[in-house]
Length: 229
Image (cartoon, rainbow, N blue to C red):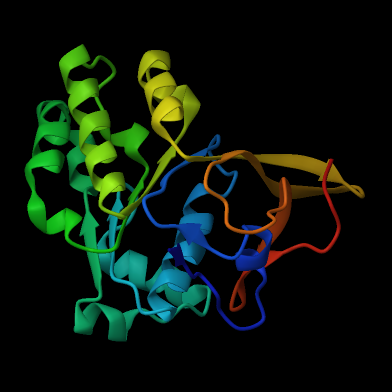
């Protein structure tokens, strides 16, 4: 089964092989400013428009801020929030409390309401984890994600490699079925965002290895026609 992300006048779905395979664990890596959140917001909107339910967990936005951000991209989500097809969870206050961050993983894994939707997006998980994690905690997280994958859920995680323990990052990369690295490169004299698909297991269509993109206020996420090398 392929979860569609098609929206009008946008061909990201085609560049990603037609959608996201059910059961995928998608890891999106990138430094600050490379477009992790914007890509997640585009994917979120695509899932909602194709009738999937989504949980979006944010370390950056409060609920009003998130609604405003989506509206600035012309991604209207109010109706989806009212219908409860979109469940938005703000964890912004958690970032200022070290003891709460320590409890994050166990609380995340044990909260069934978060995982009942077709898709779960955590942006950015590296901002929510303590610097040091017990091996048992990492194993618990990876086992939980694998169980979700086995029943067809799609889980999308974003990470800033500079914010996360290298061992934890290695585990997330290993269990991911789709690995996308974002970067900003100079192209034609301008700075361009690009997404490099490093790994894409179970792809059901031809996908583009490097996807250049830009973001326009009032328009949203736009895939560039030219390639970035």
